[in-house]
Image (cartoon, rainbow, N blue to C red; front, side, top):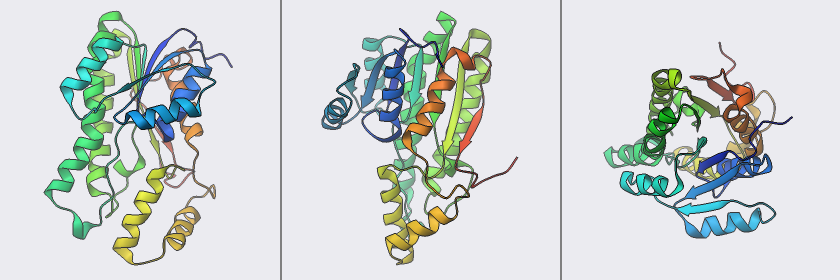
Length: 255
């Protein structure tokens, strides 16, 4: 299927690994001109090595810094597509949770997305077109004692995303959310380590239990999330905005 993305400009944040890197690959294979953003130049270099058959640009910037974020988008320009994957709030056992950890969760997840969005959305509106996809997470809908800070950031991102979608719909800008459940990235290990500290149970046992709770019987793959993100970014999804797409293998099969 031709997603009509050839020649479109796209920016992916959190682009050096996991879902972000999968989005870079999927967009580049569709013919988009992609810039990947991550705060770690070394990880970006590894990403370029991993996808050496594809052409894409990279920018190293810490998106928790609003001024630095604004400056990088001034260099890049206002893209046709922005996919936000940057930032992950650390999972923290509730006994370790304090004000510092809560602030860190919002800085890492909520403000990275908001800084990138704020840097482009008015330019998209002035142009009369643009698509933003925020890869957020089901932790914003389902309370987890290990993920209170991150879950709050995810919930705030969902509300902000839908608010932006409604505010700019008449000006041709679409904003959508994808909420992955358990996905095979390095973040799974980080979450498991927090669970080990909270429960004292072995990591392998906890992982087996997590997978057992997924009706599809497996974790998701980054490429599966990327496929949905790229579709939502494309003209084929031209009437889809303010939507929140759950991708968790039917774990939270509610209506």
